[in-house]
Structure formats: structure tokens, C-alpha cells
Image 1 (spheres, helix red, strand yellow):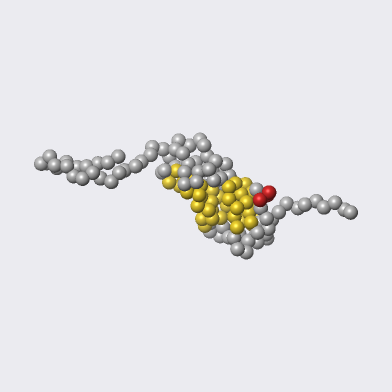
Image 2: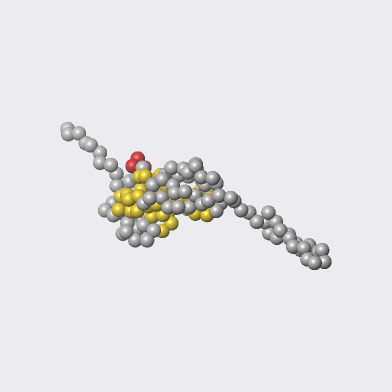
Length: 135
């Protein structure tokens, strides 16, 4: 949408810059991230969440937040803006410890901004034990 003004002499101004807006709310909260053990290791945590398909406006991407494993502030770990189909991420960080518990949450983005936070997920960088048979 563009606007322009008309003065008392009947002259019009230049058109304004284009105004774009959407009628709808910010995205609802995505599902809680889940660890994908098949792609995780002692030095990485693979995780995924469900795609939001029920909101009035389409989701344009997802943001993943993580702490450092020390129960401190969350920081952006993955920016999936303009990638609405990307609903998984392999979290890798230098010196990732299998002793610490890392916290994660996801938000969705649409035309109106960042939505509600998912519930917090707690995960460790480790693998599932493998049963080894006796000789």
C-alpha cells in the first residue's frame, strides 16, 4: 500500500514508500526440541522440532536458542530465517562436554515477528550405550 497527500491547492505529494502488513498474530510456540540420537555424538547434539502448520500466517523460519551447559543465559544457536522447511539442526560447539546438560528452545518467525517460545528441552552430548555380547 502507498499513500500520498493532497494540499489545499489540490497538489499531490510524491507517493510514500510501500507499506506492507499482514493481518494475523505472531506464531504459536513450536513443539519442544527432541534429541535425535542417530545423529548425535559425544561432541554434538542433533535435534529437531515439528513444523507449525496451524497458524493463520505462514511460518517463514525458526530460531534455536541454547545455553552453554552452565544453566546461564540463552543465546541464538541457529538462525533459520527464510528457511521454513528446516526443522532440525546439529548443535556443535567447541569443547562441548558430555558431563553438562544443555538447554534449548525454539521460536518460529512469520511476517509479524518472532513468536512464542517452545518448552525448554534438556539434553546431553552423548550416545546411546551399545550392548556388546560376551565372547
